Amino acid sequence: MTRRKRLGRFLLVVGIAIMLVSVVGLPGGTGLGSTIVPSEYLVTTSEYLGACQIRFHTMAEWPADVYLLNWNDTNRLLMSGSLKDTHPLYAWENVTMFSALVLVPNPGYYSIVITPATNMTVSFTIDVVPVIPQHFVLIVGAAASIVGAVITKTEGEE
Image 1: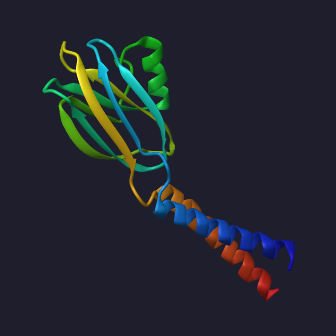
Image 2: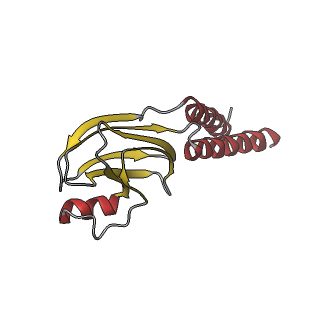
């Protein structure tokens, strides 16, 4: 078997494995429960590959503001201590609960920022769960499988 044919078979097998991971799921669902005082921010950063489901709920009727920021805006927030110069991808303001399907524009690191909407301390829970299949992972796996199949097929014809 030639080196090229081995490469083709390798890409085909790896591509199929990646596609299975996109359907079975990747670890990465997170849950957080905390309390935050007025005029402060709670920032949690995670890697997002595609779509995810966010569920938020406060423990009492005191509302909170919840924002999803990209990496650059997260750094601006941390440097300045203010959301003023940021451009949230998503904003849920003055909420006590919500559930939302979120689509990030590119795989990467994003932050969920939570702050009380009033002058009251807020206790809350938030869950972030990846949506299955992860489309970005599925596309990468399909591309690797197609390239592997083409290499294997053309090598067999020579």
